[in-house]
Image (cartoon, rainbow, N blue to C red; front, side, top):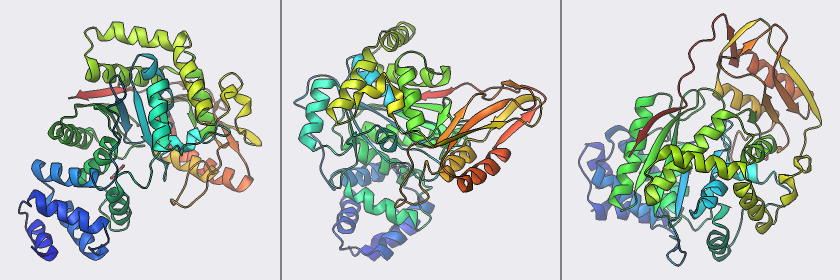
Length: 434
Ligand code: URA
């Protein structure tokens, strides 16, 4: 069948066969299908969606467009976590060593930040010397011996997604649940994992702005996993305000180190412990969730998770001394407090605007090509529901120059609302799907 016929079928809402979906992905990855035809096909999917059998076939074709890691030689359950992205989301840095301390193997392949959301690779790269580009064999060795490897996407993993994502970005077809789900799942399953836990964020700082779409995305990914015999669980978690107290790369590493020591903020610790508990449950079954979470908190407090993080930093060329001496991380040259104008209660902190303010300081990228400043960012002293008096510092801005400071301040002024009432703080874990 000619490709134009496949585009027409999808446009008309007909179901496509597995071999045809495979042909589309293969031809596009190999450069035999031009961008204009794939763009038309993606737009047809945007409007007509995909049935679950089509989505499974599409994802499988993307998954096998490149290298799929074989971790079968490594003993233990290989489990990863994927977050749909947020502001102040440094969970991976704590979760991976904590899960390893609890006995899991975590082959984590992460991405960079874009726009208002941060990325694990950028945070890791603020550790002097840390190299996220490890050869596959070395990555496997790290997972086998330490229980974790923390690396970046390679050109060999799911190349179809790399090309498709770039095309979606410029054809207004990113915001489409089957396309998002297949994009995420093809990359994650290429890690060679046995099972996966998703942290689907919902709220102002998240991709998904309401809980219904977050649930639909989560369920779509769970269903894709099921067709490939990979159990997937999902937590839907709040991203209406930044997670934890810091936004910005080396500031988030410092907060991660504090959390790995058992001294982290409650929200960050809670989300991380819940996700690791879910990873243990999906991998080996957990009979008593409360006891498991207590054990996990113990692995933070007794230094076990921190020890694995330090070993991982050293094994990947970084300076492990940052764990005991965070002043070895990049520091911004200037700091200034951002104060409340009125007395009252913090009613809301718009996470997306906070993420953009951090980007304006230089902590994030506007386009994929931008370079970033690891040192700059924000440290919150107050969160939603907290009481403030007039001129109380709500946060401290770590900045490099006056121009970026004034842009960030202007944005923060609108992002943080102080009202008369403390308001309701929604739960952090909004739902759990399996
Ligand atoms: N993240 C991905 O990896 N893919 C998408 O399509 C959207 C978010």
